[in-house]
Structures are given as structure tokens and as C-alpha cells.
Image (cartoon, rainbow, N blue to C red; front, side):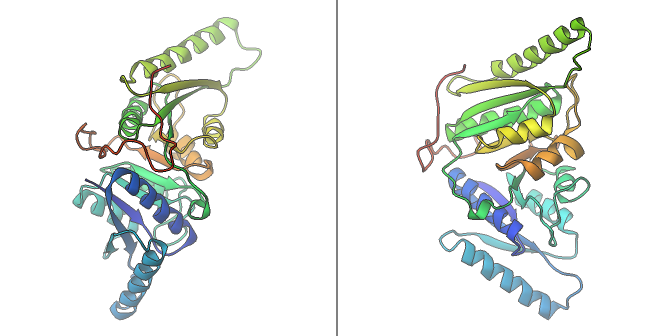
Length: 297
């Protein structure tokens, strides 16, 4: 059994997080913990009333789903979410994409970025409007891969997800734009290296995980967001350090969290390793009939 912590304060963005966390939790057979931050400006009586109201709103949103409710007190929302996730040995924290309440907004230097700094588990970000959109499953998972150590961590996490969900995996490698006037040798070397990076990722796929790869040139954030139209979920690392380097967190990752039309899971380097027997319960194909399995390509 796994555990998912969801940041919720009743706002529309946190509703997105609540429904994403519930969807992932249903697929993973996870326990849900819905967390809200107390308001230090309120006295204890008024704060308790606010907490009860938020809890009731969460229950209205998920009337048929069991979950625990936790109030974050005497500590900032970011630190409280990280502490709660560590204490509960959570496998995932879920927040909204443009959250403006107590739990912040996902912009560089704010909740999304600060959660990934020292977090014990990955952080999922629900796209705006997720709560009101139609969803069919988690059959196609994308992962951004540039050959860096952080991208390798993200790749292993995405592979574990694909195995547990019987999903197809799309590996997306984006090489930097090359000026038309650039030396032809430089272009050849850059393209060859990008292909090697992509092929190395494909070689990591175990039997039974069907995979496809995409190699593109251009702006990483825009390319990844574009792929998000097709993806049910996109996994990214926290930073890129390889020759195809482009700082992800505070750059590409933060941009993708804001703009991708699909949910994004960012995997921090501090996340605990993924044990094969614990990542997620094996459920086979997901409800909705869109889970995939098969061969490497």
C-alpha cells in the first residue's frame, strides 16, 4: 500500500490537486492524506472552523473516497507538507499548478520549487482545470531525458510507473537549437550525441515495458508542454546537468509545471530509491481500458 499527500485549501487549483491525487491513488491502491495549512492570523476557534469547512469541501469533492485529513500547524506550508510526507513515508505529494492560497503558487522560488528541494518523494502538479476535465486513465507516460543524473532518476521512476500500470512509455529528448550558420561538424556531433542519449534511455527499458522515443530540436519547455497534449502523465527530473544541459528546476521543470496540459511529476534527487516491491501495487490494466503493455521499439 502506498500513501499520497495532497495539498488542499478549497481553491480551484487545489481542487485540481485533490482530483489528480484521487485518480492516481485509485490506480495505485494508495491511501490518501489531504493536508491544509492553518492560518496563523486566526485564533484557534476561528482556525478550527476554517479547517472543518475545508475538510467538508474535500468530502464533497470526493464523496466516495476514503481519506485522512491533516492540518499543518506552527510551520510553513512547504515545510509542513515535506514533514508530513516524510513522517507518513508518502510516495507522492500532489499540489495545484497555479495555487495562490496557503499552499502557494508553482513559480520559480515558490511551492513547487521549494517542495522539490529536500523532498523525500516526488511532487505531482495538476494542470489548471484538471478537476473539471474528462480523464481516461494513465496509459501513456512521458519522461524527459537528457542523460543527466537527475534525468536518470526520473527515467527509473517513470519505468517503475509504467511497469506497475502496464502503461506505454514515451522518452522525450530535446537537443538545443542550432543556428543555421553553425559549423556542420558541430551539428553532426551534437545530433550524434543526442541520439546516443536517446538510445541509452531506450536500452534501460526492461522486457514488458513498451517504449517509444522522440528526439527534437528546440526549446525544451515548449516541446515538453506540446507532448503533454498526448500524454496522460509527464515525469521530469529536478535539474539537468548533461551536455544537453538546460536547468530544469527554475527553468524547464518550472515552466512545464505551469504550462503542460497533462499532470507533471517532478522527481527530486533526494527522493528515496524506488524499491521494486513497494513502488505501487500491481493492478494490471487501469479502468477505462487505456493501459498499454508490450514490447520495446
